[in-house]
Length: 266
Image (cartoon, rainbow, N blue to C red; front, top):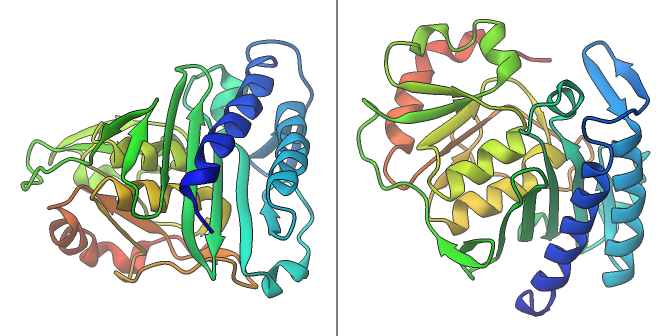
């Protein structure tokens, strides 16, 4: 498959999903709780339905894994699978904070080969296909080449910072509170942040597109044990994530190692 041939269509579909979400933004919409502190809105559901229809029309033979769709184990038999979060950062969306995104990835044999993350409020489309480099709104970009943690910009989850998970690091570098792990990964991919991490479990749809974007930007991305990712697993969850520019991974791994035992498991 020639991924360059479909990246424009993936971008267009992702952007249209974002436009549908933007139509709800700061308006009246229904909010439900899937579980405690885990909201879902009409916008999530509308975007999910659109993405499923459009992406499976683009590649009908692919499987499907999305936060807002009941999982179908048939995806495990597919060579290609769409892994999608139609609205990552729902809590920020509900609060009216423009730090949410649409995240779309295509994996081949578990490896991300096409990815697009779109922030519909800032109108930033960050996209890549395997071995094609990283672009934001069509312009080539790269990850940070910073080689020292001191003075670095680190993107941190709003909820994780509120829980005190970044307290050990508050005086080490500049910490930016930022919603949506997908958007934090995109920002790390194009060098807006030098690194980001989450020391709690993540679903595949949270990170799949972002993993490709960081890699194509020249950065590094691993789980808390320093291992790479393979997606489309029966249990689509991973043990945290660390993403950095091209020169900071070893320093961040060393920094987090003493805190490994305090990482969340749920």
